[in-house]
Image (tube, rainbow, N blue to C red; front, top):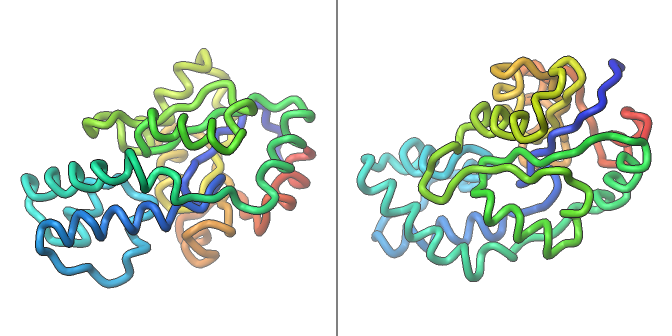
Length: 215
């Protein structure tokens, strides 16, 4: 495969299994508002939160913003750590770090939450920068986050930057910003979505990803 020097990682579904916290907080918001749960709640994992309430729950803009507020009311104290690191991730990051890669996180999750999660699990040390959105909903689209992270890294040559994520949003965001993307199959998407979104590379496990990148 092509040679890269900088790796951008998604967080939810790529480094950690955050679905329990995300789904519990979404259910809290819906229950508080007297709203039914939509089919396939796992769709909440990946896209910006406001978009999920608008698209999957049929909310108007005002209700969606209230749902986000209720979600984060629980998430900041409880849901944040209803989370676990995927098996093989610490070893993968250690191998890639030793191989000399620059690494950063590019997540639509609010940056303050992403930093707390990675600190708790001892993974923050591997990343030159942890970039995400703002709690007020600014900079929550993937391409916006990627542009922000690249700016913080000093605008590296994009031909040498690889985005790594588990959903089509990562692939689309990478394409919009001129980056290649590797799709992580251990997350919340799947091979069909990876192929339909035309991810340049697909990896089955963290170990395989490290081996593909020569870590």
